[in-house]
Length: 128
Image (tube, rainbow, N blue to C red; front, side, top):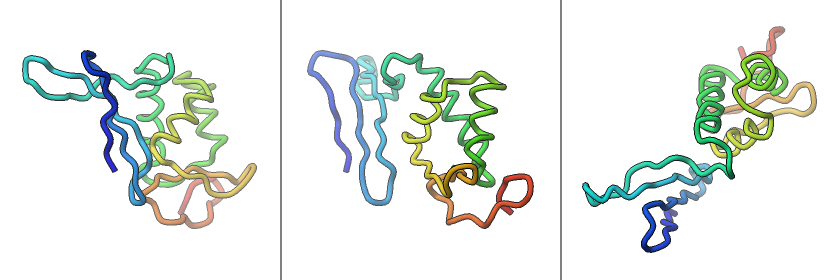
């Protein structure tokens, strides 16, 4: 399902995407008056700078593109070492991207939504 949320007279809107085969997401839109069409706008992230959320999403997509990663390692890299974002922003980016968790506690790993259930991790904490 696609739904456009827009208040008449404003140049901003949100396209909501929802369905069984796609993760629920909201796509920000901006009206281009010159072209008379909607274009991608800056994400609305509850007051967070759009670049922070974008960087968190890019980080997760890059880290998870080949194999699932341990949750603790992702947090260590994004929040503590590289200072990309806060833990809350990282979790919000995970939710918006439809990333799922596998396992519990110290064995929990994050997996991209298009991935099949992953094999058991090897000694360095990544999928085989």
